[in-house]
Length: 461
View 1 (cartoon, rainbow, N blue to C red):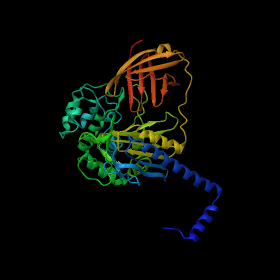
View 2: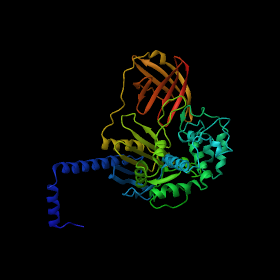
View 3: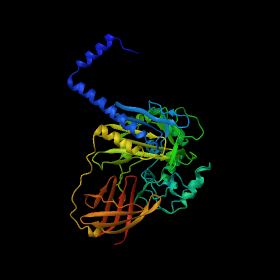
View 4: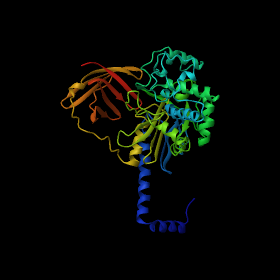
């Protein structure tokens, strides 16, 4: 529709008559929106990224809700401009599983402090007590099935779920429950089974009826390799020779750890409802978003299906996801009521978390960074070699010094020169290196990466 000359004149006069402060606000917002759009366009120019759907919402103000690039490379189908394309969201599924668990706790059907065998009596915990809550924050010690050799043999096969359970429970625990944090999908797979056992509904039905539908997430669903969904973005894996059609994965296996599909628009709806008290009661929400210390009192940064951190001086509640053909990132900044969602239909680098962080920084400004303090102790007592289990591997870190700086050399990995944070903690990016002194002697080093809190024992000097 074209405005008449008189309408254009009236609009111009109205704009001219606005208070200067309001005019500046409008100009500032327009500049911010243009900057967000420019950042998203630059990101999707990468040939490893077919398309993304992006949403940035501050309070009730939608600054960006848009799709970029292609939902289907074969047919040159553009990603819907209103961010309505659906994607497999991978491990972002975990916050929905955790929410379902807390709903069942509130209904009196589930006890977080009960041993998991109360609900899964056939599971062999090898003589250990594993409270249900230890499944929620990856502190159970049960190994992750996606890192175990057998998974490659079954991931494209349709088999009974207890096939996977029986294979996992034969493996030794990685650590005693509550003494470390190693991200594992097994815990959430088991939580899905518990939801089905306690509710009497399939996991897919429970999430749809008790989470998606009440919140109004009309375009979200349990993923399928065969069902047709309108506006579903096709996934691509990134390889040395470029992109290719994503590898097949039977959706029986990601299950409650990673088998949900959603849109950027729906995930904004979810975050606004969740963080504004419309999904869980206050005590349940606090449990969902508050990491519990390990048995020895050491702090971790993973709560229930969500990571919580203020390491760079800005509190953020976040989780990403990665699954065949797709990557996702969602972040909420409670002090600014800012939500950022980025969904990508490939596994190409640098990944949606980099764009999500960049978009947040455009809105909030550069993060202040961690508060650093000078170290006044003896560096020499910290030097040596530390080793222990990590996700899917054994991790060895050698600590040396160069003058007044510590150098951490992980194997595998490259040397890291972190800055002293406080006490016996050093920080590099999102990673905290912390030494533990007991009985007057430093005998442990933990490596905290948010989604992992690896406890390494000293093996030599």
